Length: 500
Image (cartoon, rainbow, N blue to C red):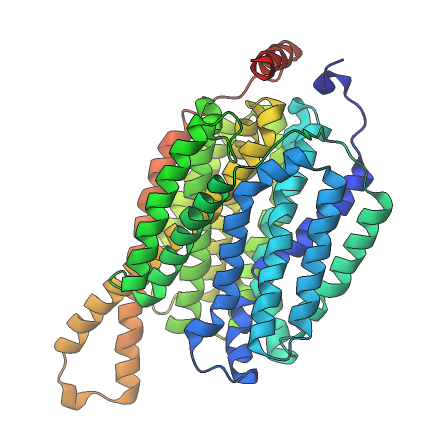
């Protein structure tokens, strides 16, 4: 009987084990940013761009490996794949926790990234095969609780630990959780996904993927700090762009591609991917621009700024399972339209921040923005994945994760550049309008803050325009049919595709 029609009891214990591992890896992703200055001082690192590699390198390794997860999930059992990735992640965490110098710490972060890059896509695929399509919204809403909440609380937790303890505790607290996850996986994990032992990997595609996604991720990340005219930035963007174009052409011509881009032939998946990409840009850029305002304009400590963003993270966590249930009942369009409307309104209000905006105003607007985003990501993405046949689930999740990783990096870099350029031009205008002989240290600092505020306002306004565009797109979202007839028809099409 069709697997989707059997409605067997989902393997909740196994999914819980996967959730523990995924939560740890997602949390680890955003845990270190606040701690970088402390690491610089402790390990005697002179250049901030050097210590920044602890974050950039992690993102690069993840971005390069995520496209290969479709092959890994297809070729290997979910049990062996999760145990291996968790063991690699645990090894990297131990290396970082007891690192005697920066080189070992950086190597540990790279090993961590290699292990964690598989966990999210693997968990998502297990969820897709464990629940019937008409109940996936609720299941994926719970997955969103992990995917969104873990990285959102990372900066707050990190700020508290760095202020009152030592940065090594960031790894030391992750290590036992990773070990517990590994033990549970060895003890309780079963196989629920089909494996294609004849699947092969195209090494040229791996190389092109590495240079393509790696080049773009590094180039756009470096551009936000080194500028768009930097020769290394331009070179990596050029290499990344050319490699990515060749990679896409090759994937479309192959019978067994590394990343099957034919998933974009399914209209609701394609539309969901575009909306998710833009929403990712808005979310990641907001996580950069808001702290820039709170810390650099208002002079609020990293811990307090993290605490100010915590209500937004909590709201996203609470709403994710709720929106999953609402999706199952009402479909994605109404949730997407309401969520993107709230996101657009709150983004516009953030573009109107003042030099003396109250704490309550800042927290309320940021939380409203997170509330709006919580209604968009999982429902829209789940609706798109529902249109794919099961054989394309690994490729659909890999495409989504890769696209969001790259778009988050690109969007953040562009909006940070917009902020910096606008702040610089505004600063030149402000300083030219006053007599230099009358400037004091405090007045110079105030003018600098005013210039930066204008840059932040301008960047948020650009983000608002982007939100309006994707809001219009959300009106074209249609609920994917999940009736038994539709599922049976999809299965027949899948069998014909496999036969051919």
